[in-house]
Image (cartoon, rainbow, N blue to C red; front, side):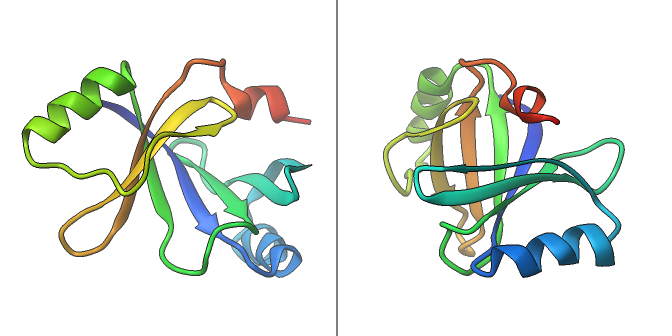
Length: 126
């Protein structure tokens, strides 16, 4: 059902400090940074493969959200609901497509999204 783990959505209430930590301390590569809808978000690559770290100043402090791509959000949501899954909120828009957040039984934050509007990470680079 899950195609790939594409993003780690990381709360960054002090956005400049978080950006410095992920680039200067951890050695990540800043691939893009945007300001839209009164929020700062940056895409940082920590390794050649694996998910992009999205630093976001609009997320409430807490653990990161693991965002998995699915081929069809509506079908994946229906399949998961049939197994007892409960979304935390209705789908919200992110630059690549609609996304639905949920929590596992221990409270870990996860989400599924469908890439409908192209690869935003590639569009924002540079």
